[in-house]
Length: 94
Image (cartoon, rainbow, N blue to C red; front, side, top):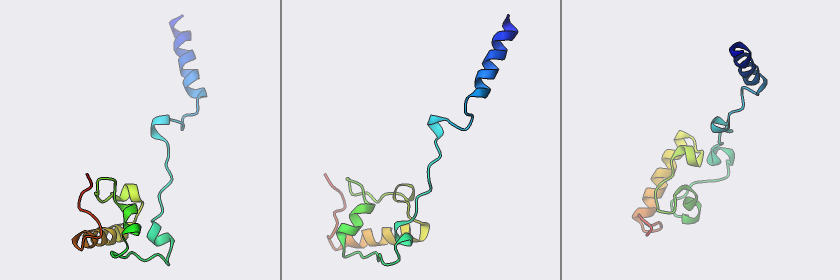
C-alpha cells in the first residue's frame, strides 16, 4: 500500500512541467536604454531625462532596476551627481 502511494506521488511530480516554478520565473534581460537608442544622449542639464534613473526619494536606481549596462550606469551616476550639485535635481525628496 505504501509503495503505491509513493509511486503515485512520483508520477504526479513527473507529470507536472518541471521548468515551471512561479517563484523562479525566467525574466527577460533588460536592454540598456542608452545602448538601444543611439540618438539618446545623457545630459546632466536635462532633469526630466535623469528622473527616470532616480527613485521617489531621490536615490540613484541600481543597474538591475534601470537595465543600463555598466558603462552607461557610471555615466548616469555622474550626470545625476552633477545635476544635484548645480541644483537641477534635489539630493533628497521628503
